[in-house]
Image (cartoon, rainbow, N blue to C red):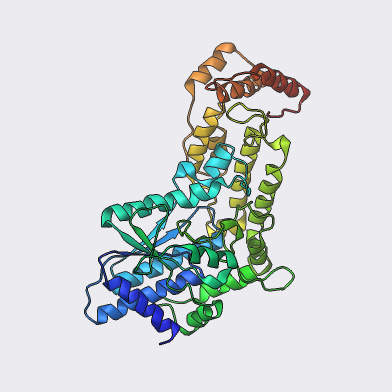
Length: 437
């Protein structure tokens, strides 16, 4: 019996041995595609044999900052899988999970001022991938008592991956328990496959739902470096609840905003190989990397009132938001109908800015300026206060800047230093070089 037959037999055994539904974590990459295709081929075979099919869940993750070309590919392939499974009556539920809007990348970075992530402050993975996946998978366990997660991870991807897989304790059925979710079991059906065997299978077996052509093109573009060499060996950035999932910053297809890595070779490869329209995203990411390390772009006091580099200052956040709208307004992005930030995120951002003293509805105003259909919130209390003070426009602007400091620190138990900040802001204002501190 060859390796392919053994894998199919393994899947069939676990499918038929209990009522536990299968949960296929699907990134759209080569390894998870093999696992999903093997599962669908098994379901088609069982259906021909007259077997009643239990529920199977296909679960994909959208951080909302995936490279547009990847997001479009994943959306299209999930739609094809859903249409095919319904047509064949395979009892498959296709799910694309996303972070809560208030925990999205731009809501936290532009809204609250979180500095762009690095190796030591990687706040993005938890908010964008782990939490949404946890909520969804826990709901499946609650509904079904137990689930079996199928992961597309392999021993030969790297030494660290092999050590991680081999370190997991297996029960008598060859399954491991998920570390975070009770009653969730884990199986890696292709863990012994080589990269060559994965590609041989995909090249010899057409996708039941369509074609592997789009995936092949993405791998080709993402793996070819600007100097013409071909990069290989990087894992796919899969759903983060995989116990053996790699750090997304080291994977081939991750978030276009990722600053955990110093150089985004995937994006470079894409731009180099026919996707020049995405160059503004690469430039935006480079700007985030630069701003993260610049003291003049960040507050000099953290939100807990301790001295030290804190959040991006409000002016920087306004700049970052407007830059997104500017990129969206270019012909290449308009033609492809690419929306980099949702209107819901803009609304959340405005609410966060309100807490930091922005009384000008700056986020909403920027959205309207660039054609978004969104209502502006009127702070009548502040409007009445400004009118009663009979200030000219210059004084209103200065009042707004000072008010931002007061609001940002109104709930802090330690308000030491606030007068110094206000004095510095006023001084800088009249010098004509306003700087947020």
